[in-house]
Amino acid sequence: MHYLVAGLVLFLGVHSISIVSYRWRDAMVAKLGAGPWRGLYALISVVGLALIVYGFGRARENPVILYIAPLWVRDTMIMVMPFVFPMVFAAYFPGLISAALKHPMLVGVKLWATLHLLVNGSLADVVLFGSVLAWAVVDRISLKHRPVRPIRTAPPWKWNDAIAILLGFAVYVVLVAGGHQWITGLPIPFPHSRPG
Image 1 (spheres, rainbow, N blue to C red):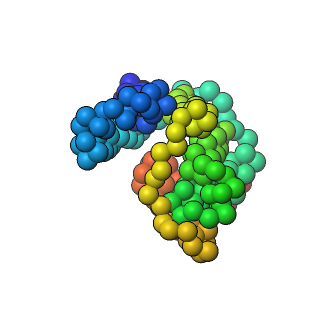
Image 2: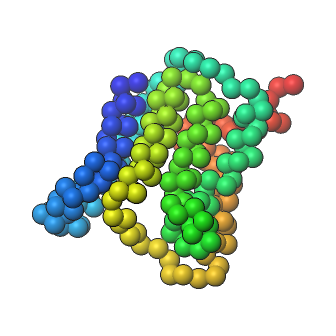
């Protein structure tokens, strides 16, 4: 659990710099330069993510179960999850989806974390997905009080929504085909895969 918590502190911490003080973030970029800042940011993020993956796997070896979700909740998650990834891609392919959701990536992250939190009831799951959900909520609130930093996106195009949907579903297919088990060590619990 220590590795998981350390990874979350690093990963979510570096992603919370603008939430805490966007002025300090801008001052550091000006001092270090955009390139070195992005490199340091990426390095901390990768180390944090690696610790999260490792720590989550270790914690699940001896899970502390807090609750068990009913099967209908799991089935609902499987039906809703395909919509998460198009939201994330919509942040980079501006169109009707991004216009409607305003911050589609954060909406996708919140939906992803909420679904996993509802379905997975071990202490490690609650710490991981609860932390990500809390961060996404705080980040969304903070965007109302700080300048929105533009990200690189595809140029406006009538097919951007279709691209976001196709890419999102492609990621979902990869996860269903074995990517989820490769990353997490856990298969996706489809209804037909359960005994009975």
